[in-house]
Length: 193
Length: 238
Image (cartoon, rainbow over all chains, first blue to last red; front, side, top):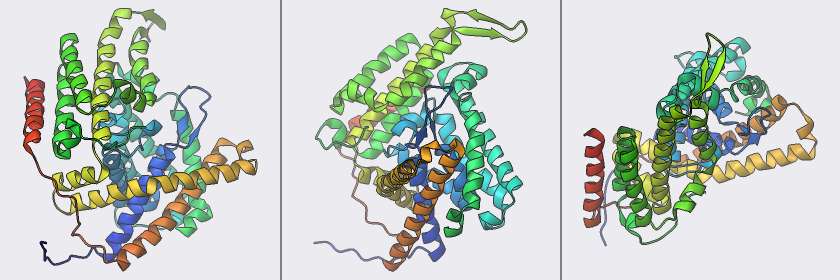
């Protein structure tokens, strides 16, 4: 029997808490992919992943919000069925959904930066509604801009057509998700966090 | 849903890192050669990969069923040519050819990643990630990935219960915004509750940077796999 001796290097207190939250949030974004509401203007239902991206930026801040969505992408690539419709693997990351998926960490970090600034995390419920909405709007723009460009490049279609197929039927619901996210921040869920 | 199935096929015996390289090289080759002949050759390669993992093409396609409408929509919409100057819509079936090839190449890439999912256990994927990404970043990614796998079913069940409870109280009659708010708030509460208990447990068990991972070793069969990856990589560049 072989033995190994090496010094154990403990993970710092605050990192443990942040890693746990970031990982749980990534799993939550994955679970949100399964929560769908019927979409009156498209056969593809509305799912809540983007809401998860908004909330990751708002509740975890720029650094750990971005890290959380990075966990999400890597776990999905490694086989967790967490991309839209329960897909997984490296394929979706280089396929037509690639632009959307890669935009998530960027958008979460951007939302975190707008909501919290770059010098530490504030309590989300103390942040003004205008700032929350501005952050989420900026995030939405990043997600759909990168997503549309990715779709156009991978599917070899024009930008207008890419937007029509991959974004048009979903953009109106982002307003509902932004309103819901503000409601969540103002509800007691935020106080419990 | 595509998940790991134990087996002893060639794809199962390969090192996960080899399989990741092969997938990346295949995707690069598919994007570099989106022509009729290029994709015909790559279809043969993809079929060979499916055979190497003993995964039926039908099951692989079924795993990516939600992707099919989008793959079909690309070529379909490019048939219409909208001219904003005259607000006229023309129909040009020939312009669907390139988007059709593009859709097909994405389907091939998805099939190849299905083989990886079918033939690679999560622990091996995690070990591969941690060895490919150096330093503490890699270790954090490894931990994060393992936790996502562990907690996804629990959070899905949490959300399902929240939706059932809401529906039982006529929540489905509420506005879309309220329904999203209720599910989202329940999800956050559960996720943070679980995260805090997990962090406490990790601290109590001296969560350290030194992980115990399954040993990964490149074997003889990986030499073949790496050669295939290299050949695909060269094909992508040339």
